[in-house]
Amino acid sequence: MPLNATPTFGLQPSSERVALATNYITNFDFLNQYLPDTYEKEFERYGNRSVASFLRMVSAELPTNSDMIRWAEQGRLHTKYTKCDSQAAVNTYTGAVWDILDANVATGAFRVGQTLFISDNTAGTGLVNRAIVTAVGTDTFTVAYYEATGQAVAAGVECTVFAYGSEFGKGTNGMQDSLESEDEFFSNKPIIIKDRYAVSGSDMAQIGWVEVTTENGASGYLWYMKSEHETRLRFDDYLETAMIETVPNANVASIAAGNPAGSDGIFWSVGDRGNVWSGGNPTTLADFDSVIQRLDKQGSIEENVIFVNRDFSFDIDDMLAAQNSYGAGGTSYGLFDNDKDMALNLGFTGFRRGYDFYKSDWKYLNDATMRGGLTAGAVNGLLVPAGSTTVYDQVLGKNAKRPFLHVRYRASQTENRKYKTWITGSAGGAQTSDLDAMEVNYLSERAVCTLGANNFVLFED
Image 1 (tube, rainbow, N blue to C red):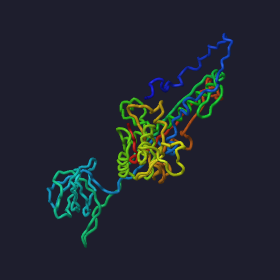
Image 2: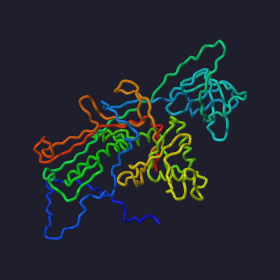
Image 3: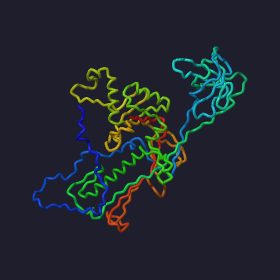
Image 4: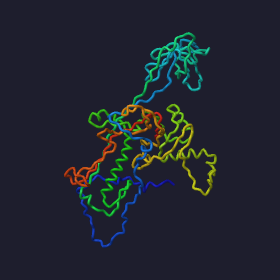
């Protein structure tokens, strides 16, 4: 039987935007002589409501003092084109001209004397050649084949070609051209995140019968303390979720109207420059094999962490449990006194298949007030490479080790905007104006840098 639709989980916010200065309590009732038996302390029915933790686990926080953060990522070392076709006919053994049709390739990088491997892209043909480059053009190259039968494919057949070496005759000149390394450059900009809490001086002096409590240890009978601490907790969560969800503003009219330009969040960066699995979770080893084969084509990072929602976590557990030869017929009692009287652990923390994969539950994807339960745009997990990479740090002026994910916050010798909080008004210790209230302000300016996004995998529903 499935869970009934009602009663369900509550989503009504517990906080409200109200004008506290006019909220004088008028419902004191002394007409009833009986005193109710009250539980003074709040019951924490939703447990720890904060969703922040992901970036604290996988990233570092570093200062920046510019509106623009730029970094360079290495390109490929070897040359390979996946869309080439020959203008020559089958059995041509020399002088075959090939066109490079790969998108965004204006000038080819093959050089005279290099040896090439040519593979037919048509499945099932098995047609290959090895050849040597005899001449090059802007986006063409001419070859002579090593095979006695000459060119294996017909004219116009799309092939993949890569260089595997070179060969020169005795007494000849060396390689005539050289190759210049190229990096890919990426940038991001910090965004300003703000929040505010205000309470009148009268409400600060109003005692309550409920003892408040929050996740960060606030307690007492002054209700404003609860609201102020929850504002701080909410702001802390937004510092993380903004780095995950923010996107660059592509609406030219909106920017022209003075709206912020946005920033590159983690999900957007991985969706744009990384790998995306869509159409449900990978639930078999064959599914994960396709992910592993993609990682082979990327940076081949040895250790990776998959941050998952509950469904994806169970799917991985079921997949790994199915590898047990006794999984279908019952529980396997192995070594280390794993007898029938012990509590059975049906979860797995990780596995190794080509690479090490560690599994971690991500509360943000499960939380009912955030991404939990979404239909459109649902994300089931994110694969994050472990470790760090070397980048050129503009602040330090030298190469430095950085985690693949890290947060840059604005700071200088005179201003640190990592996490600013200040109090204004004339209550709560503040003496900055004649306003009979305490206003607590929060501000941070930060951006997330997703280095090597090609090594990340976003698992969409």
